[in-house]
Image (cartoon, rainbow over all chains, first blue to last red; front, side, top):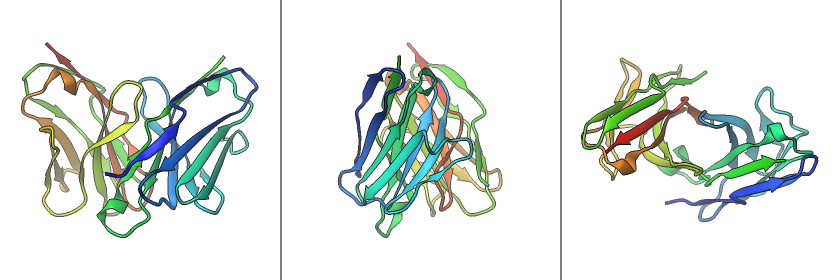
Length: 119
Length: 111
């Protein structure tokens, strides 16, 4: 099956610093990747849709200057949490869709998630 | 717009008993339906999906779900659960858009 690798799996940072999370599709190309945020015991909330070679599309209420998304290649998207604060502590998950033709492009493949703790 | 409702936030069940996790969706277009499982501090793993064809779909570990268009449902069932099935289960819907998730159902299997 398709593999999406997310790194790091967990990170602790000081308030005011920035943290970068990487999402890679290892065995397929993904023109579109999605970034989700999950609070404890809650569902996944879509933050933004990352499009290769163009600007990301952010969901309402998500600060684009705080959550910087870059999708520079067909296999890599990054999410940078800038000037992190304790309220940004959460579980961040990326997913990617296969850009190829066929039923596999209907499915989203998920990374293992990144636990961010801001102290 | 699409939405997903998972009617039960928590479902406790004894080991080897059957279980059903309910999922209803709304959409104005044709949809694809998914069930994902999440173990603690991990990402999501696809359990099964409905794209087209047979309305009954099965996973390799004994789960099945049936797409019911008239009732806009995609309930997940397993005839006999194991301790290892304890996890959070998310139902999701997609047209040609990002996945929209339900709020999740916590399945707790009791020995």
